[in-house]
Length: 222
Image (cartoon, one colour):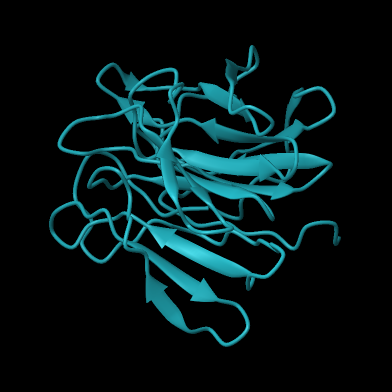
């Protein structure tokens, strides 16, 4: 889940995602990655859920970037789609929770873009949706199978081409992409059923049209 906006710097905005993990012999932790302090950074801060203590990973992201989104395969690994690094990129970095080591996926995104959203069906697949690239905003949703990190692109996509969108998931059931801008801010929330990746758009939507918002979920709870 992340905070992001168009192709301009937003000082003080740290793109974030809480990546819940439970790895044998390790402590469950959350990670904040990338962002801008006036220029892009590669910093990854790790927070231990047991006492909220913070450490900063020695590895960091593979590049300095903002407009980033994160998702997690709980207990195994977390992923950051890097977004914008002086130009739009396709880079997706993977961090193993067992030792916080980083690799960069050979697949990457299907197109270079930033200010995108992400969510995950933990144990199965992660989804990275929307964003803005050199050709403008997109409705693309890329799906990464956690078994081998292979990428497919959903035939459905988002209901609109959006940047500044965010995502959350009810793991095992459905994921949601909400808000964003098409050039005008929207209140739409798209729901993807994990059983078949079919998309519906909620009749409720957000309480107001907005972008650059954050999202999180208490998975499995009404």
